Amino acid sequence: MSDVAAAALVEPPLGLLAELTHRCPLRCPYCSNPTALTRAAEELDTATWARVFGEAAALGVLHLHLSGGEPTARRDLPALVRAASEAGLYSNLITAGVLLDAARLEALAAAGLDHVQLSVQDAEPGAADRIGGMAGGHARKLEAARLIRAAGLPLTLNAVVHRQNLDRLPGLIALALELGAGRLEVAHVQYHGWALANRAALLPSRAQLDAAAATVEAARAAHRGRLVIDHVIPDYHARRPKPCMGGWGRRVLVVSPAGKALPCHAAESLPGLQFPSVREASLAAIWHRSDAFNRFRGTAAWMPEPCRSCERREVDFGGCRCQAFALTGDAAATDPACALAPHRALLDRALGEAAAGDARLADRAFGRPPPPRRRGGHGPRRRGSCRRAR
Ligand code: SF4
Ligand code: SF4
Image (cartoon, rainbow, N blue to C red; front, top):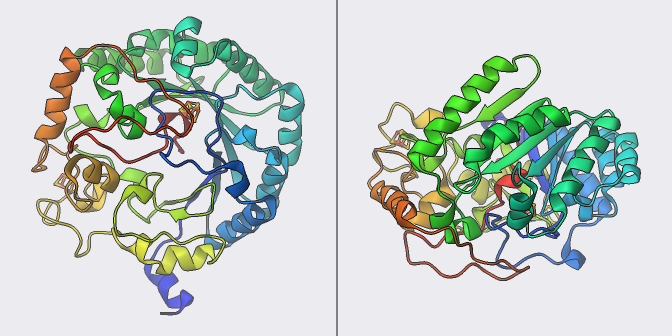
């Protein structure tokens, strides 16, 4: 099939998540860093990323999310932002902020950066530094937020929440207001990779979640027009799954530090799929014609019951393929986050384990894989919630 014919069948993507590097100075226990990290020498170079940004814009992409790892670990970040700007893309830097200083912020703003999404681990400095694994990290983030606003850039605060900090949500909302953020994302941990290994210590209770929802509603009313708050019920407490990445191969494509094009961050964990490299194929060819992007697209033959005959199949597309594989061993299975899924009991059991669990977190080190778990628990890698693309 020609590119023109293929393009008529598939809508263009709206967003590109560019994972510029796997390097990061923090060690969050929910970061689903790959078990085999891409080293700096293997990362795409500046010229290749610039070509990819141009191809993305030509394909129809509007939003570019510059992510990682920690994207500010790339020395060429201002050049990459400039390339994105010249391609006509709206650029969003997703950062932990601890490597930013005034000079770097000024260079990024001058290069045309449009928006910054800054992650925080907690409202309380000691707890934030403990989770991030960096003494003084929280203070650096607060300084980064001040510099972001001083550079005239709009700021979204991405607060990663779990059982050990959800009760401090009022403090996180106050922090967002104090820092001048226009948006707060209350981002529940997604249980893949390291987060799955630490699930019993991180899963919030139903009571915590209900209190958080009430806090968010009250804050939305109190700060309307000043702060937008995004809060989505996490999978383990939901009755229906979310359309992961807006649906497989539907809205977003991800490019890994080494150049693999993926429909979602964790897709490399799925067996039997060959993901094309942007070093060897154009983004348009990958999006429209690659087997990997077409494998779980839409609601075609791959979809099993109960999804196939469900009225929500065009709404959530059966949920997340990577979560389905991580929990059931079958990438085509109905996401257990759905109450109708044959494997839903796996999630309910995990909630029971968390209720009885302790708060100890496994220590992380660069490149060291999570401890093994039995089926129903061993998960693939997936980017941590700190870098969720909107
Ligand atoms: S979650 Fe984000 S900030 Fe934390 S270690 Fe992973 S990449 Fe770094
Ligand atoms: S059965 Fe499938 S399509 Fe229906 S709500 Fe559940 S996951 Fe979505």
